[in-house]
Amino acid sequence: MARKKIALIGAGMIGGTLAHLAAQKELGDVVLFDIAEGIPEGKGLDIAESSPVDGYDSRLKGTQDYKDIADADVCIVTAGVARKPGMSRDDLLGINLKVMKSVGEGIKAHAPNALVICITNPLDAMVWALQKFSGLPKEKVVGMAGILDSARFRYFLAEEFDVSVESVTAFVLGGHGDTMVPLERYSTVAGIPLPDLVEMGWTTQDKINSIIDRTRKGGGEIVALLKTGSAYYAPAASAIQMAESYLRDKKLVVPCAAYLSGEYGLNDLYVGVPIVLGSGGCERIVQVNFTAEEKAMFENSVGAVRELMDACIKLDPSLG
Ligand code: A3D
Image (tube, rainbow, N blue to C red; front, side, top):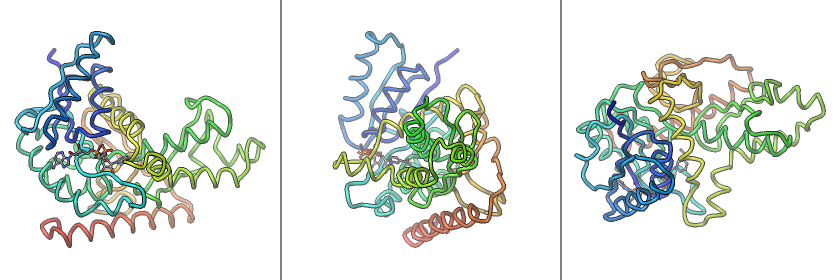
């Protein structure tokens, strides 16, 4: 059986980490594409030189030519600019929208059958624009944010309870940003929901509230520490989980930015919802019932995503 091909569009901090993880897990051969000459070639060669030590056979190639991504099975898009301290994700919109246009056209021309996973911020608006620019089927274009946001939530909860991260599940919906919606009653330790854990005396509601706040600001916390860019290890790990679920048809139920056509009463937008991710791409959208409070938070988050989409349309009326 021929190896799968993973194309990484953008070979910066996340792109390089994606290449390393994809190769180590032997998900397939890896092509790193970037406009910066030498960076994708250098990272590809450096990672390839670690393969005899680690014992994997993925091939890695760096390029500035879209032809090299031909027939990729998965394209993971991180091209664009990342946040620096003092910047919000939304500040990136103008530059990254132009980048999505060129990336969308490159993927359309050379890898139209791929699953496309967008990571570039501001995520929900960029994945929406990327789908339009590429013209790929909506179920084959998804955004990575929810796995990362829930991983952060899970990590902070595991620390609070002093239990394994594997025993903690978390449920985060909505747009990727400060309006994201962590759902307490669907977040558990070994199936026991957070409100029950508060009743059992494992923690207090105040502590849960501050963990939720830290989760919402999780990206900013890393930006403030790094000073030169944003998070890349956990974002890369999250996107690799999505690629793996698609390539191995695992059908993981994971929160992703997915295109809604009627689900949650919404149309023509991408926002974070739980999906079944298998060989068909986004195979199903899981619709949960909200309490009044959760509904208000979700609507607020959707409003923030729509504002960014409107800003995109102003910059590029072809998206309207
Ligand atoms: P960085 O290390 O700057 O890498 C971006 C790369 O994109 C650079 O190597 C650029 O040369 C390259 N690039 C720029 N324009 C183009 C183009 N037209 N075609 C191809 N390559 C191009 O950033 P990073 O890897 O740290 O982050 C990448 C993106 O992910 C940023 O927009 C971040 O804001 C975003 N991000 C999203 C999340 C989510 O959870 C959604 C988390 C962390 C970062």
